[in-house]
Amino acid sequence: MRPEAPDGPAPAAVRVLIVDDHQMFATSLAHALQSQPDVLVVGQATSISEAQRLVASAAPDVVLLDHRLPDGDGVSAIAGLHHIRPSAQIVVLTAATSERVLVSAMEAGAAGFIAKTQRLDDVIDGVRAAAQGESVVSAKLLTRLLPRLHRQTGGGRTELTEREREILDLLARGLSNADIAQELTISVHTVRNHVANLSAKLGAHSKLEVLAIAVREGLVEGG
Image (tube, rainbow, N blue to C red; front, top):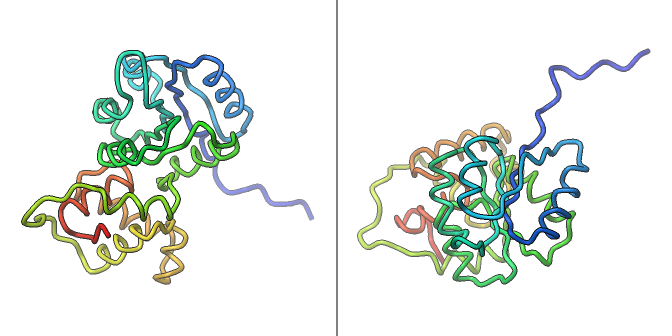
């Protein structure tokens, strides 16, 4: 018997924009990503202003954003890039894993962080995870960062369902969508829908920003 053809078209490649002013690093990263059949590098930028132009014209799914750029702080540019393309998942590239920088990136809406000392395979895995809406951060690091997030007095006004609160608590433990699905005995698709609803209610662009806003509003413990 001949094998059956897979149903439907193949999934589109993940569109990636690299924003880094270190040419050798950016070029090596682009080559590594471009070698993957499911990844398409749609551009390289060396500044925030160039990144803004390419986010608008190249429509990336994932932006790998250096923390330090010639015309400003990469973390401070996240909000502007989200304004141009709200669906873009922004992963911060950092040479130093300062918790202050990571907290700021998390609160700004970053999907995660990748240290420049990590292996290229880790970066590739991180791109795929971000494209799937996952947080690019270890559970151990997330546990360290949550207590450092800013909180507002009086609590928030966002009303969540009991299931959404369950999902939120599991996100705070660093669980992936698949892990949450297994924990609650529901489908991954259902988990994604709940995360999307949480993002919409809280005005977040990523799972990490969902947590940052939830901690600020007192919807989840920050440790």
